[in-house]
Image 1 (tube, one colour):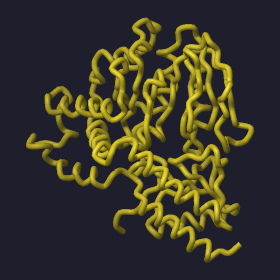
Image 2: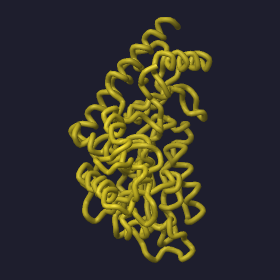
Image 3: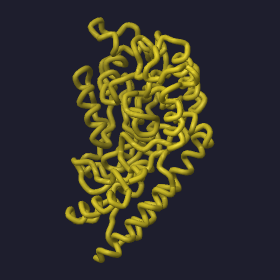
Image 4: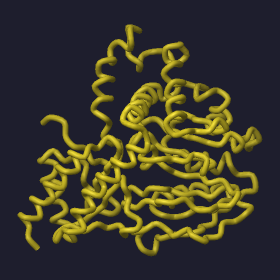
Length: 361
C-alpha cells in the first residue's frame, strides 16, 4: 500500500513536502556529512537549526519580544505539573473543564495549589465547551487554565475568556497554528508537537517572561523550572534535537503556504466539507454541539457499535487510516490538522457516502 490519508489524532500526518525534504537530508544535512540526529547540539550547525526554528515561530505567530519560546520535552502532560509548579505565587488557580485533558490538568494541579473549577460541561459528557461569558474568576488566582481544543470529544472554544488581569494558561496542543493566534491574550501557551507542529518528542511553550520566576520552591528539580530553559535558550541539556529540526521545517512550510490566515481558511473549508456531509446524513451523526464543533477533530457515530467497527475496518482497507475514536468514547474521529489535505477529506466523505448507501437505515 502507498501512502494513506492519516486521520489519527496524534502522532498525526505531516506535510509530504516536509517529509521528502527531510528524507533528502537524512544522511547528509547540507554538506555536514551526517544526519541531524547524529550531530552535536552544541555545534553551530545545530544551533542554527534550533535558533532558526525559534525565530520562525516568532515570525509566524507574531510572538512579542517579552515572551519566551521554549523547546521542552515530556509532552503536554508534564506541563500539567510544570504550570502550577512555576506560576503559583498565591497558591490558587481557576480551571475550566471542557474535556478529559482539562480534567487531568486540574487533577495534577491540585497536588500543588488550590484549584477551583470555574466552569465545566462534564454533565453533558463534554459535548460542548463551557460558555464563559460573564463567568467570574478569582482576582487573586495565579492563573486561569483552559484546554482550547478537545480531541476526544471534538469540541473547541472559538473565543477566549475575559480573565481580567489574571494570566491565561492554555493547552493548545491540538489547535496551535491552525489559524490566527494572538499570543498577547495569553500568559502561557503549551502544546505537544505531534499534531500541528511536528513529530512526537517536542513540547512547545510560549510564556510571558515576567511569569518566569527564579524564586520557585528550592526542591523543584532544575529541569522542571521554566527559568532554567529560558536562561539557556532551551539548551540546558540535549534538546529533542530531531523533533525540533522537523518542527522547524513544518513552521517554514506553514509560512510558505501563506501563514496562519491561510491555514485558518483551509481548515474551515475542510471542516465545513465534513460537517456538511454529517448534517445531511441519514446514517452518521456528529457528537459535538454545533456551537462547539472543533475544526481539528470531528467526532461522529452511526449509533451502532458494530456498524462503527465495520466502518473503521472498511475505511482502513480503503486507505483512510486512524478513524477509530478514542477508546474512552468510541465511535469515529477524523483529525483535520494542517497537513491533512482537502483531497483527503473529500476521499473520506466519498467513502462515508458509499458506506451509507450500502447500509440503508
